[in-house]
Length: 286
Ligand code: RM4
Ligand code: NI
Image (cartoon, rainbow, N blue to C red):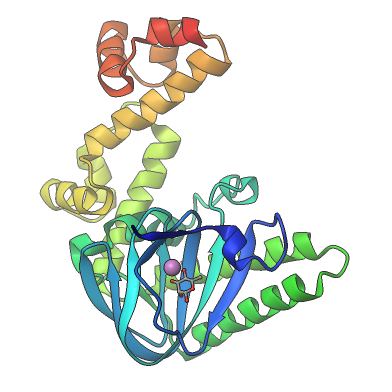
């Protein structure tokens, strides 16, 4: 049985959604999963990192996020030191951030962690001197707040953590690596879909604004998300439609039209297929 770590195992402040765990050096530590997400910044040395079934070299300056549920482990460590910033990704302070103008954010926290193995980790973030220094400084300040617990520390720790996330996302955006660039362009396209899902979407144009041919766009999209762009759009629409049915009491056809479906029968078929229940039933149940 794999160890499944929880936030309480590493807590600095009880019931707070962020904690810092420094590993200098990183000791041998068995393969594990977590209930939380882990932002890892490699601060010294190098080693091998295994995530699920894939293994990759890591070295100073590398940054990645291990989202809950993934298995991982370090090996062949040569003076490997790192800092883990452990957090609950479902905390409202994070969920409500407007990062629609920051494709690096989606790339770093959502696309890269889930699909790094599809492109052999080529797209991971590597920080250069100044950027790494700034990231380490923010972690130092964050940890200091969590240790000293002065009045207002939770608010400022949240602010520092967000600043760290934005700093890293911006660095991600600067990356010259072609795999990282392609991931960013897909992140941009997803941000567009998330905002315009209720409109008619022209995938040819979307590919064009990502600077790709329709074919390479589809391929890059699939590699980044694990689903074709069209399905991603459908799932986004259905998610919003389900909210309208559940929280706003919209009728089935209103929910369909409000979320970009032109035909409510087609909507009902898709809803049933993906949600395993008809929209009518879903609506009355809620
Ligand atoms: C371990 C190792 C793990 C991390 C825990 C908090 O030493 O770095 O990846 O989940 O610390
Ligand atoms: Ni871990």
